[in-house]
Image (cartoon, rainbow, N blue to C red; front, side, top):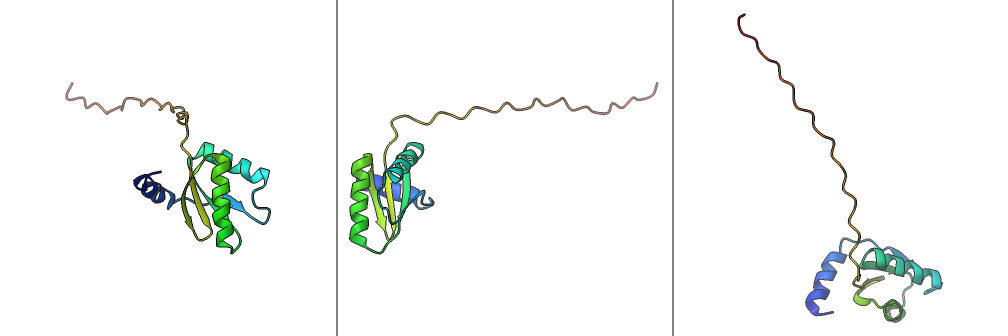
Length: 113
């Protein structure tokens, strides 16, 4: 990622909430599966890592990126942000059909008969 792309991704990630939390088990198969699922659904995700070891969090970020093919965007505190471009755009949502409006009825005024 270029610095400009990384800056834009950081801005997009600011409003996101973490979708995956890494606990004591660290990178288990189920956690990696959840990260994969989240990256397929959303190309940019936040991951929360419990624990106070910064070096371990940095290693986890590298391992997550290696196993998933994602790019590291940001590592602030216990939050990791990763990005992987989706090769397929998401399918468009089906359009809702709007109810047809009935013509508005007006009162006719009859003058002198």
